[in-house]
Image (cartoon, rainbow, N blue to C red; front, side):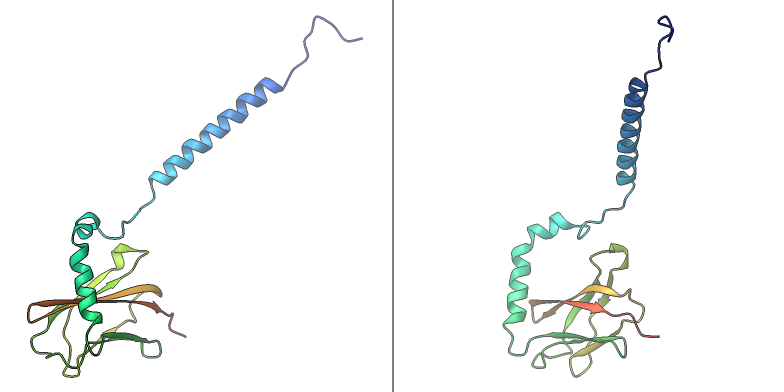
Length: 160
């Protein structure tokens, strides 16, 4: 017969305390992990760009209303991006830039000066770009009027 003066070990209080201790430790660890992650904004000057949004819409509309629109193409065989501006615009007075924008990694963005040839094209080597989604943004000024064109491209991994 069991001894009534000796109490039996009850695991429930210890189990409940261990469960809550592990749950709280996991929650604190997850919060620390989340705080250590790098979160890039879409752009570093996001709020400033928002204020200038109507000007941007005007530039996009002006570029879209040209007789021959700007085009951007990517040739995976050669690893080149070709930016073509409308042929009816004089090339010698063009000023602007081309931005290669990587939505998933702000540190890979590139901004290049716009330097088109006589045919209105600029070729960019894409072999050094990380495969994946890129936005090619072209902004130019001609005779005091600003134009803007944006196109998404998927840079493919070059076959070995």
